[in-house]
Image (cartoon, rainbow, N blue to C red):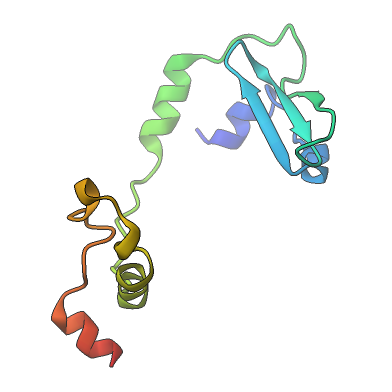
Length: 115
């Protein structure tokens, strides 16, 4: 099973979505999207479902599809980004997040590679 065969009969392709820049979703109407061209524009409501009489998604089938998706391994650390984060962002990080791996100062060997 693949996602395309499962989702195509239920949802539109959404070609008009590319003409908008901002989107809002409402939990009460998961089949509709409020689309805005800019923050001050009037929202246009687009319906994502193909028709109102489409059966609700089969959660068992969707669950099987999600299980079939291959897990992607974590990317290798990028020393340039780590050094940039420590120089630019770390000084303004609140005290409770200083030891987070995202803003921790890179190891000495990573800094030596950059020099």
